[in-house]
Length: 208
Image (spheres, rainbow, N blue to C red):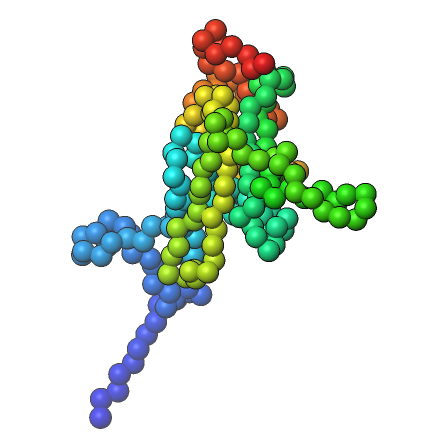
């Protein structure tokens, strides 16, 4: 029988024995194994695409979700009766202001006698208003009955000041609200984000 003696030399980092050093990216590339991207996140959620019938004013997925939630809250039996109206008004610290209002196609007012009557004060004007229908694209994890179709209404005059921009819903620590972002018609904007100055103001007179 042959006796074998194994001698281990103690090093200054003896506690780390048995822990292999990570292979460098260059070494992995040499042997044909792609290096992992340290900045990648396998759990990162991909923002769904938004489908809309008019692309003059883009609606983000965050805005679609918020409009849908407000429609369900205000009109639980028929969310399609609610919509978001976007318009530009004169005023603010930079000359023009972005405005957002929730409108309804079925405005009902309770009379003094307890009855209800239909009112058409907030109806969409087919001659002046543009209706943008937007919805989230379904993926394999969503059901067909999860209808996210929403309406965004804007008048033609306001669209001239917002063409090419995005309607977004921004969540911040101090507030959450609808906002216009990436407006190519804006020359400058104030810190509040709700007021802006128009490029080539001489060619775009102030709104009445």
